[in-house]
Amino acid sequence: MSQGLRVLAPLESIYCYTFATPGVTPSGNASDPLYGNIFNILNPSDMVPRLPLESWGYERYGHDLWLPGYGDEGFDEKYEATCEIFKANTGVECPYVPEDRERVDKLVEDLGREIPTADDLVTLGGGATVVKDLLADVNPMQVLYGHYPSVYIAWMQSLDSVTMGS
Image (cartoon, rainbow, N blue to C red; front, top):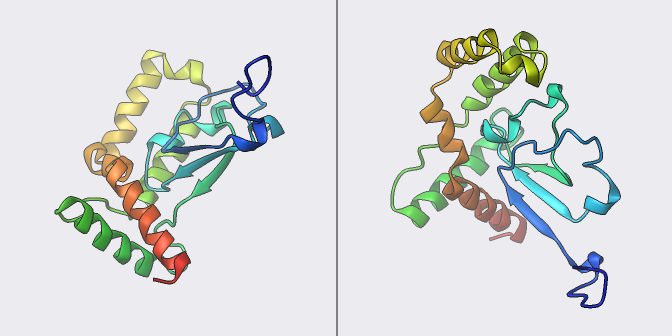
């Protein structure tokens, strides 16, 4: 759409912002300059952007921009602002548990070690490993709160208010 007889816009005027995007390609060219206009907003406590595993060769096109995560400098103040905005937006308390970042990190590490390739995942042993690791230390329903669009929206609004000084 940026070339040909009916150009809608030049490529340098087109931008894409994604939220919670999983690794979508094993192609190896995801960081090609052609995709420099793609920005992926990711929550470190969200399991979805961590799958399929990077160790299996999967990646996202464009640039990854990680939201503040549990353990990062200044996180507590940013998280408090995010929770306030979440409640203002939705009328309910924020169910997101930022400490899940540690559980997600451990799960990704364990799966990468125990299931070395994507092909290993589809074996009986690979499936059993996923179930075992999920049940060991992760509450999937709780971890999915970090994937809620309203959590991403609140984070973006809180960071914008910090950046804009309000």
